[in-house]
Image (tube, rainbow, N blue to C red; front, side, top):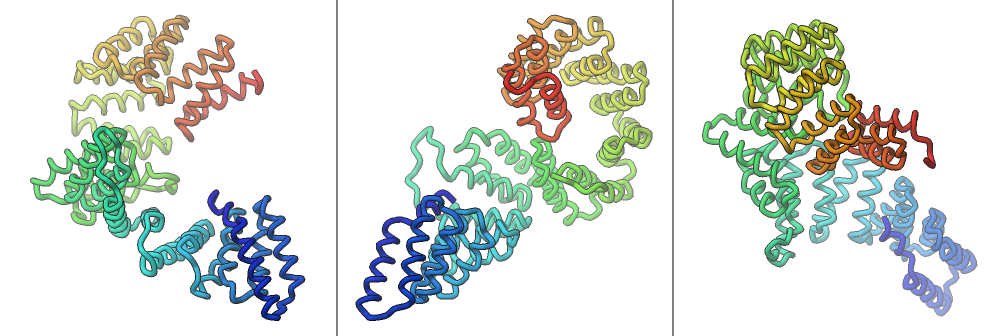
Length: 494
């Protein structure tokens, strides 16, 4: 948009002035006063870059029909004024005169997109590739638009074309220099992993080599796909790829992979169960999202561990602890050595008010897996949540969790919470800061530091950490708690 603000320059002014001189020499008088007036108004509007400039240019185009490029200039000004609906008719008149430039086509597509007409936007950008040489700008817009419509095939094809285009325009990258095409390798690998996983590993491994920021997920996805492919079970390959996406909270791609698994094998209960969970995790899910898929999974296999576990989570989210506990107990009976299920059962009993029984499930989880820091951490968090035996149970559990995972920000944060509740603010702060040294984007620790600094009457530090908690974890209880602390305790200007 910023570039469009420079469209009305002295060169355009001189061209129009030259046109007026030519008109006078030819003895043609197309209402010269109105033209001069429009010219002056357009120049006056230049500094403000307002919609008025677009309107004046459109009037000039009406008076000078042989200068159809003025319609495009008007369209650019309308876009610069954040008025895409007004820009569309200007651009389309230039299009009708067959003089719309590549930048005009790009802007017209943008105007359609901003007016919620994605199909017209796609058609406009596709025309660029047919009428002109494909450009990075048009291909990038098309890829994003196709993906918005969940058109994986279209997006993949466009990204391959974009990769070929960029590769032909680039010199080989020097060592230790991140290539500009790294993200395209990554985007292609990610989409292929969800849609056509057998083709994904080469792109994922290229992305991992080129960009350390995406290396972890790229390598993990490539590994699980390569390990699954020899089994010659395409539905299973989609399932494990979806599970890896889910582990990294990329639920849209996870849902697509699980859906593909069910399409290949409609009798695959595990895939239906994971799809049911993914449907609840995508942005703004409808109220009953996932229930039909979970029901279908249980109908296919009542003894499915995934289906029973995810159905328990479904009812837990809808605050029906009785139904949730029934499904979770079934899952625990199916896998009695699963420590994670014991922790979930402990959470359910605690929510029901039976803290004594809940504690036995947390302790059972530790017995099942005494070398897993997560079980000790869960017991410590349970004690913190219900203020139980902080000295005798929570503190030893937190120490054991830290001994097993000394660099885990969650374990460090839990230790800080216990010390905070025991009144040892100095050491609580020390553990919180250690947690952020290991993960500076860990939202709970920013919340807890915000609370600590609020109580220590350090409003600037408190506000900084609480703001980060809100930014890093939007629409979560962590953000809600941070927001309440700021509203209740920190006045503007403190």
